[in-house]
Length: 211
Ligand code: GLN
Image (cartoon, rainbow, N blue to C red; front, top):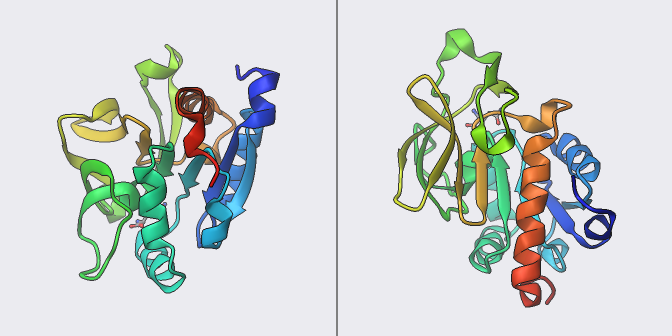
């Protein structure tokens, strides 16, 4: 879907403190972006967008604080450059977290409350076909692994998908988040959707990309 010209110019980072980084890098590359891992503050330079992978949000918080990345990540999102978080990445983007560690930090920016491990132990992991109208009629194969749910949304948040009475995918301007793991499937529609968001932002505000 992404044009070859876009593929040459859009660079997306994947926060590589912890989690399923490689799978996101592959999905982004398959969606026409250049993708690279972000481990240090300097790695944020020149990125058009950023993915926060699935993994363990409490560990991600500890490592981001240890490595001095928390404030630079907040500044990255505040610059308007798009960010996409899956599962633990959703939690890391959320303004509020329930059932987290007391000292758990998030990047924030996404005006939602994320409830950790909201699907309970008996269904720690499952796959289900979700309706995501923004991606077209075909259902999306959603892999949930100790997944959070979104229990409150602010006024600017667009709900992209629900599972029963739980919100499991949202967008707020340049922020995209899923409670499940699109990177663990061959269906790249969420990554292509994100790369389009990044391309649109880049066209609208080219000066925010490089320092
Ligand atoms: N339960 C994890 C957390 O709280 C998220 C799990 C995942 O990313 N698959 O961070």
